[in-house]
Amino acid sequence: MPLVTRGVQTFLERGPRRFLFPPEALGLLLAEEEFSMGGVPPSDGLCKSGVNTSETARHIEEARQEAEDALRAAEAARRAAGAARRISLVAWRAAAAARQQQVAEERTAADAREAARQPGQTPAAAKKSLAAALAADKKRQQATEKAATEERKLRAAEERVALTAKRAEDAMREANTLATQEKVRPPFTQKDIDRLKPKRRELASAHEETGREAELE
Image 1 (spheres, helix red, strand yellow):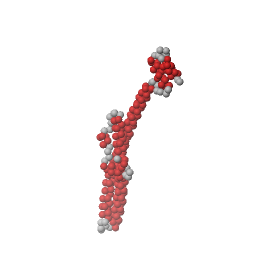
Image 2 (tube, one colour):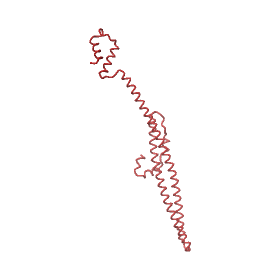
Image 3 (cartoon, one colour):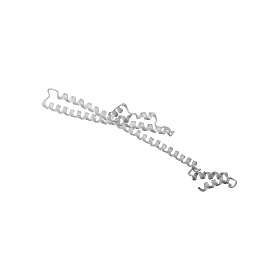
């Protein structure tokens, strides 16, 4: 039997008159006896309180860090969406110029073919007009190919705009949600989010790409 237990037992057996213990000493003995038998130390409540406070502070710091990380990710996604839109604008201008060039070359080729068919030309003149028609038709083909290439580039750029805009929207909404949980002002307004929304043509370009529809939902 532990020493403390024997002391308490002796006290209880002899009675308070023959084994004088102040009441507070008896309380300490009983508490120590409980701890020696596998119980909880008297100061455990204070220890738990300190642990709980530390754990709460850790969770608060983790939540704050998560909100900051989400904000940085949203800002990066928004910049990526803006860059994609600028690239798309450049691609749109290139495609428009290529289409205009194609139309011009088609008109020139048609005029050259018509000139080559004119009757009454001398052999030299006929040879010259035929060569001009062939050269004009070659330029028309080149312009057509260039227009098709620029159109494909534009479609790819518009697809990227739609996808990056959707990712940015999701990231901005997540940052707003975490900021609200932290009881701070959401960093992005609805106007900020709407400004990044893809246009109808950009959405159409993205939906033409197989397997990308799910990323836009």
